[in-house]
Image 1 (cartoon, helix red, strand yellow):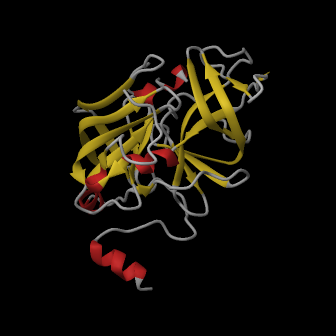
Image 2 (image 1 turned 90 degrees about the horizontal axis):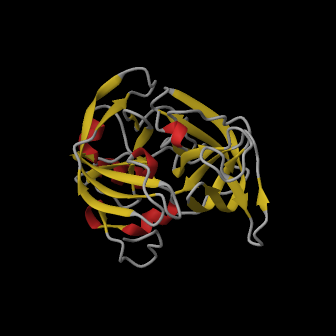
Image 3 (image 1 turned 90 degrees about the vertical axis):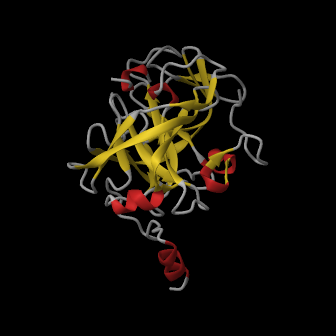
Length: 266
């Protein structure tokens, strides 16, 4: 983990000025951003409006190595992000945060920045926000992990889910385990995990076991419901994101008191 620091309905949607991922997505770098030390993506919820301020999804540890139990909410920020074109090779422009809406490494490893730009403006820049899936991801589905930092797309499947993933002082629940071809490296932290069929974001890439050590920094271990520990050297992981859909209300505003919002709270 720390190594990654380094028809009609369509017509109606079009009339609103928002585009959505096609039913069969060709995953590219649309909506992808690069941070100074990580990767990320411009994301929206299924109900986000064109006039809403856009969100960037990345890892909590791309903000800083947050303590276990620490949750940051609504903190001012001026962090910049490089918005990539669909090939990943060109910067469309810089976009800037106005605040860190949410960040934690407790239960999950995720952060959301709110930008000064709206979703409509992101489209004017030549890109488009990726939609967060409101459903739990499915095992054996083809996924793409898209890194804006390295301008690289990793292709694999969701191998399964981990009851608890433990790394040093942190514990994450219901983590996604990749099949071995997603051999993500430093700088890929915060990359969106995209379901290849729907084009929707189902998770955020965050860690991998580098040397086969047990439950240590850069060497997470799996803990099942009975407490049994498994170490998988060379295997990488991400954190699901569907839980967050219930935490954003009108105006894509974070509201941790909303029904169904089950993420860690301050």
